[in-house]
Length: 459
Image (cartoon, rainbow, N blue to C red):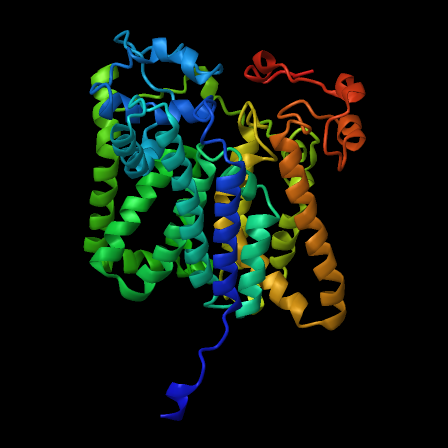
């Protein structure tokens, strides 16, 4: 009986999840824009429009959207007409489907409180933004479970703290939450968790959930289909074991069929929508704005450009890259495949015509793959903690990088860091400044979007 009376062991990783939840909620209630009127604008509006279409206007024709534009600000694109002449949403409806429960809570609250039940009032904004926090918190709980399989409780806790507070994930959870990145962070964390579980159990529930999550990953942001490769590659320690993996999939054919069926059910509303609006079961709604130039990827710019360089604005991810060198000590057969997926995802991201992805902080599509990159980051942190000298150096560096990320998140929120026109001279003239120096505005250099879409020099 003595062991039953022993106090439960202290879990740093569990504490880190709760600390992050408290921080996110504190920011939400003190700095969130849900009380304002410019919450669902730009890309967020295009992802969102399906919800008021169905639940407020009860149709998909989108005729209501034109008079609504003056209420939600500038930046909404309505130059996309289908071959039948009907307007068709540029963005697919995956994100709207994920946020539907939160929209309905806002819808009910609007009716109960007498607020405008149009989809564009404070109750909707409150619950939609709260939904982003729920996705972030759930992702952190899933990642804690995943990382604890191989790494110490402390290494797991530190990884979660750095990932959330030291990278641009924080910005896309707290400052621009209603575009895809926080949701994709959750979806890939869930897909990774379910993949690990499936290879242990091969059960029906896991198969159905895998199909659902995989479909949402593609439906929310189609280029993130790259991340789905982690499923067939998981724990595949050697290339010559592909035959065994194929045999396993044949043996588990029923489970794979259930995955496919589950995925089709998620896609069905989108397919029906395309058929209604365009007369086609599949329609590439991005048009010319969906151009990729795979022969001229912006590799260097994507990493180090002052405009949006990933490692320039999120240097804490260098810990993850360093972790690839020691990952084999903790997880067998994963290093090569993870690095391959990182390289492939990055290559696709920087091959897009607008490789800086308009507004935001840092190279925002990289946030989507952070669940996978948390694994090598945890390996690096655990390796550092074994060596006293390295630990004494690394801990202050980590704290400095977290501080810089938080400070620059503030700068991006206040537009001290311009969303697409930062140059090296401007960056350093405003480095660690609370307010932008008006005398430095001439140092900004706006890219020419019309030239970029044609793969021409933007300056």
